[in-house]
Length: 155
Length: 111
Image (tube, rainbow over all chains, first blue to last red; front, side, top):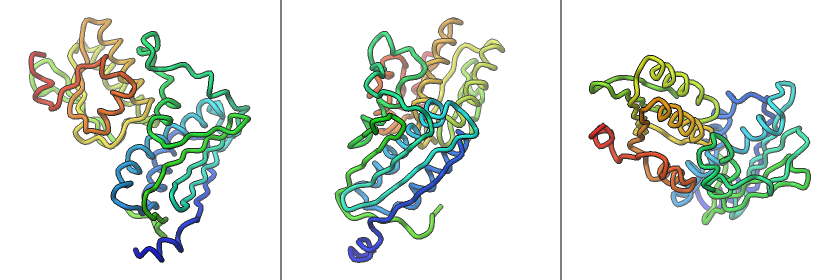
């Protein structure tokens, strides 16, 4: 893909409305990642950091945000712009305060089964932002070279 | 994604994680290992040679299983984590909870 072609494909957005079903997460994440064509130095972070973080954001939205309510939905918006890949995940819940999540690496929390999702997102992504209500999280991966969505998903 | 549970060398139960260990399939792994624990097995090695990625739910289920196995006097070891997976355990400090071997063979040593 030439830089001109890449520039043309940039600034596009993929938008999904997902059912509140944990079984959908893996396929949704694989679809998004397969549509992102990017340079080698970002590919590894896309394959691992972005995948894990997007799974965390979607599962938090379905389990905690929407309270596992099958009638609710989760909105996923993925955007490629010059220098960044952004994924915004929004649930239909009342929101929460991300500042009140305890440190999962503290000795007293190390044996807890849960509580590592937000921590991992913050460690693996370049930026993580919540809206004021706390029901929408934005994950940002910095890109050092042009990237673009593929027109069709690849296996 | 699938979990292959087998007993290759004596009393150690080896579990291969194929694909992902995430929120959508962690219960399968939990049930498979708990069934072996209830059946009397006490030594478990989870091998990640063919694993793409793990999320916090996957990490959590390993912590939970390790606690249950230790309560029964057993041990859960991990092996063959690639660099990315190992980083997850280091970031979360879970590398201090588990014995993590570079290879399956190393994980089986002195078990």
